[in-house]
Amino acid sequence: MPYFRCRAVHIDQSEIDEIREAESLELAISNLQRDGYVPIRVVPAHTFSVRLLGAAGKRLKNREISIFTQELATLLQAGLPLDSALKSMLDLTEDVPSINAVIDLALQRIKQGIALSDALTEQDCGFSRFYIGILKAGEAGGDLGGSLQHLSDYLERLEALRSSVVSALVYPGILLFTSLASITLLMTLVLPQFAELFDLAGKELPAPTKFVMAIANGLRIYWWVLIALFILVAMLLQHVLRTPHLRYLWDSYCLTLPVVGELLKRIEVTRFSYTLGSLMSKGVPLLDALTMVKSTTVNSVMVEMIDAARLNLKQGRVMSGAFADDRKFPKMAIQMLRLGEETGNLQSVLDKMSVTYDREVRAAMQRLLSLFEPILILVLGVMIAGIIFSVLMAVVSIND
Image (cartoon, rainbow, N blue to C red; front, top):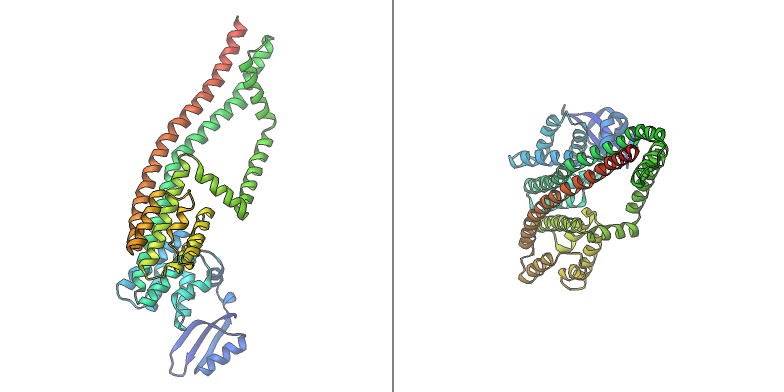
């Protein structure tokens, strides 16, 4: 059903400026008149405000959702009613049009008696099923502010984990890029000049020098092949990640990689335990909570394990059995899940799991980084030394 932006004056002189649903423009005007309003301006919402169209169709970034959540949680916990809090946020977020538009439309829907969770779901602008589930639990329990604060903490924790991964890869990435750039310059600009000198000498070059020169000539002449190959590999990887059964094989392979695979497992367990524990702490039933956790899980192997856990619960069996059947799930995590189910204190165990594995993820990342940097420096150093050595061999052979 279409939306209309309605500005009207009531018979008691009060004025409204809100968005309403109606099957047609004529019906929207008729509804206003029925409610005792004199319409001043009634237009389709998408022609009245480009921002509202963006709110309904544009997905918010993770950082924008985090800002929205934290600010709304702060205002609600300060004692403001929901509509007043949203009105205040309209002023606070004027410099962030995407968030401002979402708040504007949500406020109009709340004035019509729609719950915040439903108002955000209607907009389809990036709020996950997990997020909406926590909101619904907070609305049902009368603690929307607490639920939003919980969501804010959750989003900040995920962002901290994501930032730590990116930060850990920045230095190795810069090192790799500069080293490859140096090798490329050596091969394509410096070595060809030596090749001319070697040709003038008219002597047979050593095998290592011939090998390096052949690579340099290939890079200079067929550089476009490398670019095309890179694009082809990127397209192939994109196809793999979009095809369910290929994505599963890829995720399975990544989890079996030495060192990196163990880190990925810990990251998945951290997200799973924290998300599931958060939902259970807000009173969401375990089966429903697993469905929401599945919707926020990216790794297809983990998704399959969650499906198996849901099936176990439906059949009256324990959830941990599904994870025990798959060797990709850490043994300690399985034991902790089993302990939580046996003692009836699963939510507390999940909270401890998330803290434990979050600590392990950070430690594993530091170990991986400390291992990766010297190996990268060693490999690149050997490559550059090999190029220089091959040139020196040719110079010595010419002088002999």
